[in-house]
Image 1 (cartoon, rainbow, N blue to C red):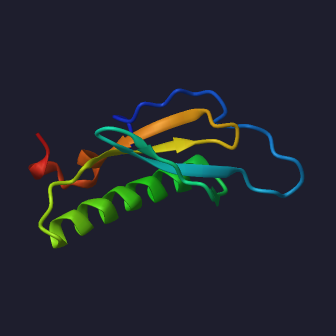
Image 2: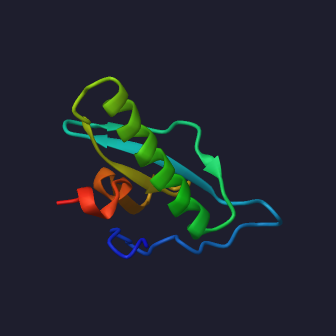
Length: 101
């Protein structure tokens, strides 16, 4: 399902002390800039992170459709607590297959 994502690999399986879950940040890449997620979200594993990123992409598209606007966002960028980009989920991934280019 997520095979088309740009997975960079570094930090995806970092060790975390104790029972603390790793924190991931879901930045929004727009045409001209990146809107940074300042808070982040603690998630248990990469599959959950991917599902969350896809849900965020769907929400961005849904809001653009409801407001009758062209989506200005290009992708949801997932970063780790060190700021390393782990993957990018293009908003087109949120569309059903028949609507993708």
